[in-house]
Length: 137
Ligand code: HEC
Image (cartoon, rainbow, N blue to C red):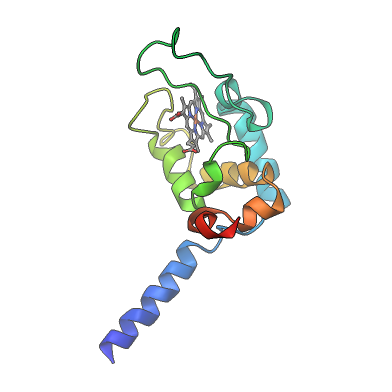
């Protein structure tokens, strides 16, 4: 009985955690996220999430990362909504160029930013977002 209860609650929790992943974002969330994107992200990740142009490795300083596209040209969509929120708030270990926005951007705002990023992906990509990307395409 206890085991069954554990499994049921685990399923419920995981459904809640992954509720938005793979789902299209709402227009309100996208609009709010777009404004935030213009303010905090566009300088590096570019208009419509196209990313910075690549720098040839021969002239790139060691350890320098360009901001990758966040549209569907790169692999942002391989991550769940929650992982993207986490990256936005915590930054990335591999480069200080992607700062931790915690303290500047709230969890709600990070969620709105993710909604905007998802609006840059086609419905097919949104449907294949997250762990599904391995088998879905
Ligand atoms: C100062 C430049 C800069 C700014 C500003 C910036 N980023 Fe980044 N971002 C980067 C770099 C550099 C990377 C890592 C590139 C790599 O690892 O190849 C990155 C990586 C990411 C990733 C990981 C994508 C993936 O596929 O793993 C996400 C998501 C992201 N940024 C979102 C944002 C959002 C949202 C904002 C605005 C709140 C933002 N970034 C602002 C430079 C920036």
